[in-house]
Amino acid sequence: MSVVENLNAIKNTLPLHVCLVAVSKTQTKEKIIEAYRAGQKIFGENYVQELCDKVKELPNDIEWHFIGHLQSNKVKYIVPFVSLIHGVDSFKLLKEINKQSFKNNKISKCLLQIHIASEETKFGLDETELMQLLNSSELSELKNIELCGLMGMASNTSNTEQVKKEFSNLNFLFEKIKSEYKIPNLNFETLSMGMSGDYKLAIEHGSNMVRIGSIIFGARN
Ligand SMILES: *Cc1c(COP(=O)(O)O)cnc(C)c1O
Image 1 (cartoon, rainbow, N blue to C red):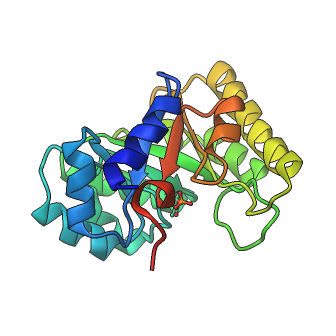
Image 2: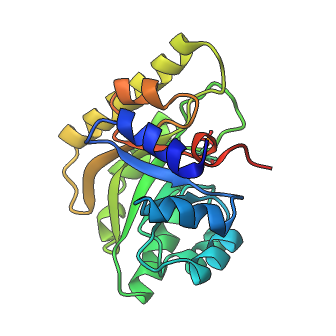
């Protein structure tokens, strides 16, 4: 199957309220263009250098999402053009994004990454750290940040009960913050969860943004 066939097959199964981020890390510009010509405008990348290289050579109406682990010292390279940063996992990072966004005269949309998987290796805030961040009096001073929701990655396991539990925990947190927290720069509308292997389960548990790579573009090298 071609990129376009894969993309259309997935799109046909997505409910209308679910946004598809085509994860193009390590994929060639040619493959990205194929998806773009078929109507896909949102792409997700994990590596700063790779993203900066691709941006220069690809159409400028692509909406780039940064979905990887972001280091504070690299924020300045991507803030000028990214439309959503999925992996914010510390106050320090948020402050740096705010600073660079101010310099660029923009408000950066961000998602807070929550650690929901049982694996220790995955990044993200735990619930206590999340609450500390949201309760911090400094948060409303970050005027160049818009917190748009949460992002999480479930455990890489065939145990679907486990994955369901992780997604529904994240959904619960999302809904709770959305209804209980009234902070000026908080505008919770996006719950980013679900990848190639688990996006259907994620949608069943409240996801409205899925990040899908390998079943569109093929396996990565
Ligand atoms: C690579 C990646 C994806 C896409 O993974 P696939 O299994 O190829 O769909 C989604 N989210 C994040 C954060 C990733 O790093």
